[in-house]
Image 1: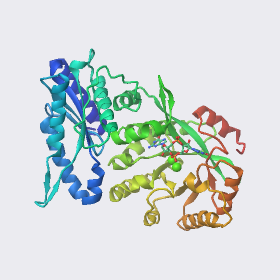
Image 2: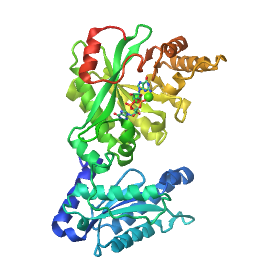
Image 3: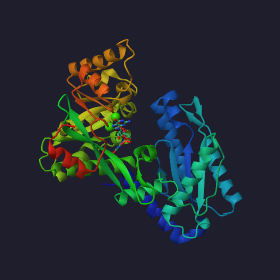
Image 4: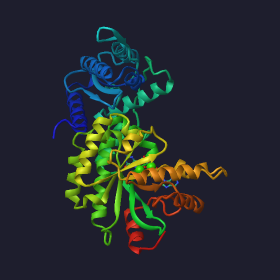
Length: 425
Ligand code: C2E
Ligand code: CA
Ligand code: CA
């Protein structure tokens, strides 16, 4: 298949490689971060946002060194290869400022709205690197933009030359993640889910960990944000699904265990998501009804019509869907009654609060349970840490739970051994 995000990135890196081989002295990579672009969608609506984005994409094409030299990076950023003649700090700064100015020229929408988009630009010139391979150059531009963004007002003309940017310094960097995906450094750990009241294992949730060669094991908090912005989360999530399905398909005595994997908003954007999931199920031999895909309400809030179509295709495969982190995102209660969701996972923040004597908290948990049960959903309490919390979620009607009280996330081997023992947790 052509044209997916990985294909785009690969062809971008190839183009960069070719340019470097041809004329290293004049090659520079810029990263452009648009100033609060999501506000444009919120304020003016998706149609206007599309016009603005495509105008900006055209401008980026004009600024870049040639066809195929611009990579869209999430909703609000671009990476581009540009040609520079003056590689002094002043010369490069002038290029960066020129890009900021070109991007922020007002855009006329429907002959009446004038919208100007501010930006930050980070630039790295091949001339500043001893060894200017594509990934190092990308990393240089990343380091530059991080510094630019850190300085503050994202409307800036801020720019920094980075020489000898060390790709390992900021592990969340695009370039580092890209090679980590290729090297298989993203691996799932599994946290057991238990049935209540028996506390026997009914399955597990796969949670990603980055086995970083220098920084050790990194938790999702450290890299998921950047992975989502860059779109690389799709590749990471696909690897998690692959690993989780393979592990559960081959688990001895595991035929009844169900595995949950997280989906991100970017996954829901992919028109071929259901085909990908089907291919993973066929490839690994896991029965569809043993896979649960978790999606947060926040992820559903970006393009509901599109997400709904994708989720419907997933349901047709026979996989089950869970609403994750229920109670902390934007609440769209009408979406719960679409019949798409089989499981409701109550966020930890609703599980923790101690009873203040008013009974209100217990009433809320019970109300969520009766709503979910009426709609035919199973309810999981997340992040259960104490016996007291367990008593409360059971009293409210939760039939499943997950949390440190039972078990932390663990390796696939440890999970398989625990599940095989059959003992309650
Ligand atoms: P989540 O999906 O809500 O996952 C549950 C998180 O709560 C996990 O953190 C888990 O380790 C943690 N947790 C479990 N039990 C307890 C408990 O009793 N107390 C406390 N305090 N925490 C508990 P983790 O693994 O750091 O993941 C954080 C978030 O990162 C996840 O939240 C999920 O939104 C995201 N994430 C993790 N793996 C993936 C993935 O493969 N793909 C995507 N798209 N997102 C992922
Ligand atoms: Ca989850
Ligand atoms: Ca959750």
